[in-house]
Length: 328
Image (tube, rainbow, N blue to C red; front, side):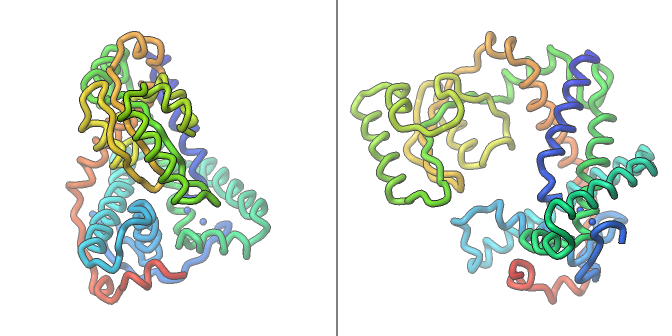
């Protein structure tokens, strides 16, 4: 059990280390543009700078196909932004509840990292330029860094405490969760990459679909056309919330062995085939599946708590426009 817990926590530490470009920053690199309060979440105040960061990155998550001249699309974006902010402060709230705070050593470590990060980027001006691409300020950078690298990790350590924990990670729980809440799929994938031609990719994926419909096997067609980095013969086991929504929805709509028509996402063109959940695969890959299962259940726990937080928008919120939030 301790082995499972240690692996789960280690995974999340590694995971956190990979998302620096989206994380928060005198205290090293500190600067702000607009600190007016846009909203409150529980007892926490959310500044314009912080709201703008979440709004812009939630917009990116909606993909290139989203039409932000459509008022309904903008309302969806606002809802997504509020939910993202709720979630971050739900994490902070729980850490406050359990009196989990950054130590002086943690703060020193963070300051040293940010100093090094600024140097690696070529100095303060380059650092600020990079943050601007994500509609961030140094203060927001620091705040998000704290939440991601410290408070989020603190809370996961509290929750992943084995059989008696709020989120158990014993083998039997993981096996049961995989069978009941995972789906297994493979795909023929033509990625959208810089310099690639959309029309050519469309022709390739349509040719793949035509060959499938002519009676050729999925493996044969995938071998010929797919550029997926995953072994298509094995595919991937996934759980709700892990993959792009369109991929998830498509996979779950299929019967075992059935393949989809062509779908297009921000990643490229796909033909999805659903595969069965196999006990042998679960047994051999339990550690990997543990991290995926624990992540989903952690997110479900936080989402549930976030939904209970009271949100109040301030008058200044009514002065903010979509253009203000997304333009440099």
